[in-house]
Length: 359
Image 1 (cartoon, rainbow, N blue to C red):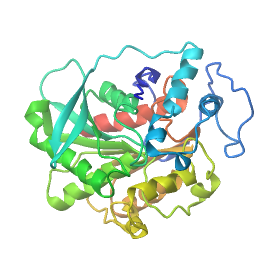
Image 2 (image 1 turned 45 degrees about the vertical axis):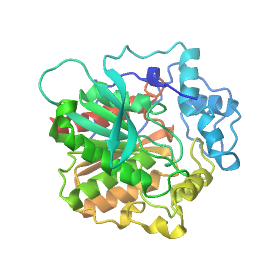
Image 3 (image 1 turned 120 degrees about the vertical axis):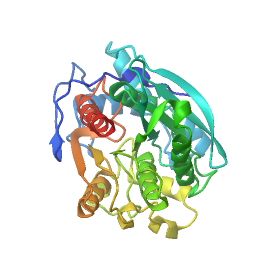
């Protein structure tokens, strides 16, 4: 099943931007009213976010750990839920102008699909953003996370490549990491084809994809490749210990729970010892010399404290970093800007930071 959540976006170019660690709340619910009360795992959830979760619950999805991976990939997801809520309330985003095409690239000996977004207008070489979708290295695709990549292209006017890296369990660690670095090298080697400036490239990603984006920066630094100009890390996976306060507080959260995250690790990793590999446990990696970083965190997320720990480590390494927490929203909120004011704010902050770094 292919999901196209692109119509969930409302561009946030006019959003006021914060460049300090902050906590954002917005109670403008656009008339969206949930049916029931907030769940025990999220008493502070916003009305709009709760309505999406209620719609997600109406799908009666089986826990991913209880079904085959193929079945999990075909279940309706939170983006489908958000789209249905938006349609019910008659909310729609603008018509987008970027040209979108799928292109098969040969990266590191692997044939990978690259969904390429080319914003219209302007002249000369464009900047480029390499984007990695979420899904715990097991689920997700460039199609499922289409809305995030499209928002980046529309608001930064950069060419965006969203890469379908190999997924687990068919492809175990470090397959996705190898693909991520190979895709970055492919961009550097094909700048003319893409009509981009190879000195103006950033990396971005969500959850496992954010882990891949940060790894690309580490590998580029260590192998002498041209460094990305910026990292946009949304709900990043930064370690595999899962004993943080947020993992405990939001163990039963939706759409991402502690059990689901543990399942993702078990599917991608071949042995528990790999949880300590610095490609997974970024907190143990030397972070000196990484590019300026923007971290976006929903509050209702087991990964919330992963992001905090990474911010602390980056600051200690002298890396410019901004982390913003958004109250009342869950994992995967970033692309839901038609419904969520927090998403509009997050897109405004994050994509303005990308524009600034890539100018």
